[in-house]
Image (cartoon, rainbow, N blue to C red; front, side, top):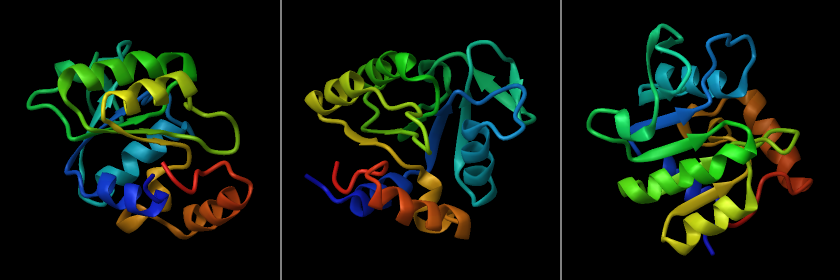
Length: 158
């Protein structure tokens, strides 16, 4: 097993990151918050939403496979029942890292999808948020990370 910090650091070393579930109506949608912040701190991010041509002023892609040049990592920020299909697509495309976003509720975590990814050699982070770590982190997310680690909503190891 790998510590969550080490897995997060490796994930955030990726330059090209897809974020699934980015909404056309962002308000405070978790996927949009992650997408915007990663873009702000210099990542090349790609919004995946099969129902939108654009989100956050950027082109949206129907699938991971539609992203020109592919990606290094994927943040799953959809309903959990969509996570398995995303993990399977990541496996098929050779994407080695998947982060299933989770805040105070169940978030996007699907245990079967996590198991599938791990069985195929992917690093799967099943909880928490990429904005809790590294240069993407802000004060609020760092505090949330500590609290959610104590309540086991953020895994200690993946």
